Amino acid sequence: MIQSMTAFARRDTHVTGATLVWELKSVNHRYLEVTPRLPEAFRELDGPLRELCRKHLNRGKVEVGLRYQLDSGDTDIVIDDALVTQFGAAMDRINELLGPTSAVNPADILRLPGVMQTREADFAPLMAPALALLDETLAVLVETRAREGAALKQLLEDRLDGVLVQVSRTRAALPRIQDALRQRLVKRVEDVIANPDQDRLEQELVMLAQKMDVAEELDRLEAHVTEVRRALGQGGHVGRRLDFLMQELNREANTLASKSIDTETTQAAVELKVLIEQMREQIQNIE
Image 1 (tube, one colour):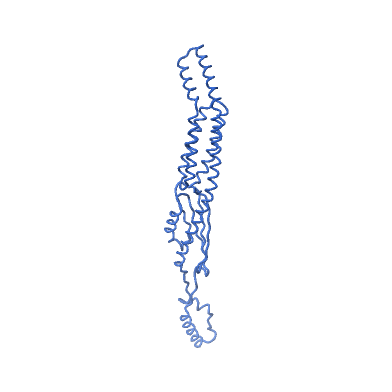
Image 2 (image 1 turned 135 degrees about the horizontal axis):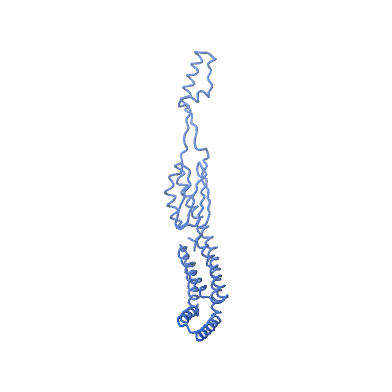
């Protein structure tokens, strides 16, 4: 099966203390290029993330984004109960000595050194679940790419059918085309006999002889179509192979156009080039 390089996948999960969400987006690219978008707390996943991407993917520009939401926030406020008790006792003693006018607001105690501290959340337990979820998300991305690849394959098959239709029509017209060429050749010989010019005769004979037969180009077009279909059937990482075959098909279509002496063959060559260009554009998305 072939895979498109254009796809999107999203997976989320809730683990103890947090919700994790991975979003992956891939587009076509000559090689595999991974762009992680990780929160600072998950920076250590950069290496394992790239390794997982290489495990699942061969080509494509892939953006890998992680979002998270902690159940209790990124930090906790911790009160030192023992220290508060000590400060409270000290304040009570001050009140006894100075009288009620010196009463202290509890908020003042919270501002005293060491009474209130913040404790950062522990992200270490989230690393393994995050990687496991990424593995699942990459599998979903591959499935999506495969579905897109199946659609691309069908599109290419339809265009290949179109190529064979043009080849068949041109081949069927060969006897008429060759007869027209023979008539032109006879006329040119008659013209030269009337007005001898040996060099010019040789040049025109060579040119007409080259145009006499396009069967070789038609045969090669059919052979390339067979190769494209073989590559599509094999599946795997065939994008570069298919791109090369499109170049070969285009070369034969150009040769056919250059040999054309009638509108029907010219039109067939134009249709071939349109079909080939449509396939080439889609093949850029195939891994």
